Image (cartoon, rainbow, N blue to C red; front, side):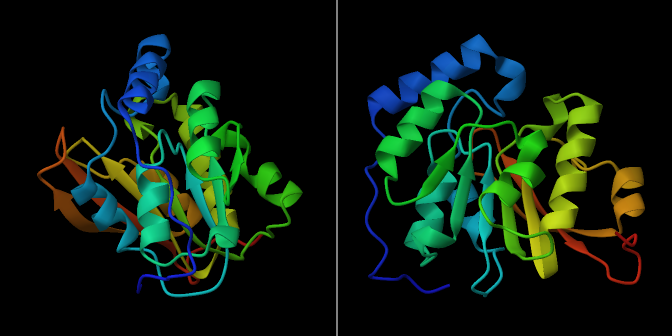
Amino acid sequence: MSPSPAAPASKSISAAHWRAFMRAWLSDPLRTAAMSPSGPQLARLMVAQVPQGSGPIIELGAGTGVFTEALLAAGVMPERLLVVELNRGLHGILRQRFPQVRVECADACCVLDLAARCGIAPGSVDAIVSGLGLLSMPRLAVTRVIEASSRLLGAQGRLIQFTYGPLSPVPRVLAARLGLRARRAGFAWRNMPPATVYVYSVDAARAPSV
């Protein structure tokens, strides 16, 4: 992606935003992927996996907007983005930082219904950029998020997910059932903690019929 001069600049993360992130973690650590916002190396690695295209991009678990900012800086037009964050405090920060982007306070498990309300059809999404902490989420919630994501992705669409664990954060059985191919895209060793990025795409030959 090449930077776009048309994309408005966002308001950079501040100490107040960082404190809000910490409050979110302290109030519900199982729903927050880390004890600090993701670093620039991880953000660059995540955004580098977004395919070229003009379709919608959905961000799940946006936190304070590190990935949102990187997407805009990479040239993604604000009107293509749907940003989802469950924590109300962080949702408010995102609305403040990115007034040009549609930001919804919602559970990622309901992203299929949310996308429909926003006019995003199944099979039309270029990328889902996920900041969710899948390893700390209940198995049923992970299943619902990944199932919904697989239905939203277009033929060339990608689910981009980072993890702090040594293996793919999407269970192999679930990926096989949904016809998702997984590849390890890279390792952000400067991130705190270090993180691995995985990319999941729909294998047309294996995907279940809808």
